[in-house]
Length: 88
Picture 1: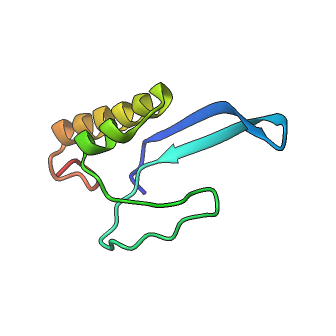
Picture 2: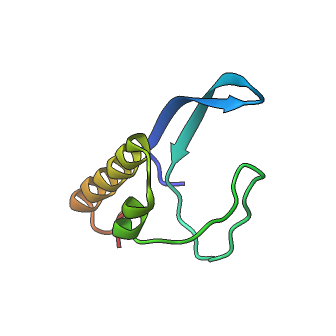
Picture 3: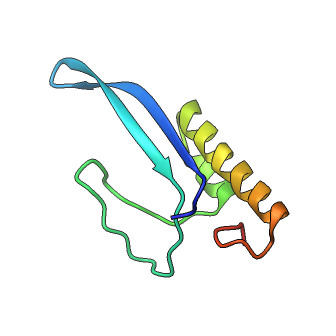
């Protein structure tokens, strides 16, 4: 993982006629493999650049988290361009 970044999001989902609160913790990571194993909560995965990812997001909260991650990586790169996890 990329140290120093963690964001928590809480929202409500409807399941079986009930409203449930869901909590999701987001982290940044690096990989050199392109294959992805997804959970049963997901139907697909794809690798996108920032512009493409932002265009696909439908919820303001998801865009906020992506923008926060981008700002974190930008600041990290400005502080140390060699930092592991800096934007490339």
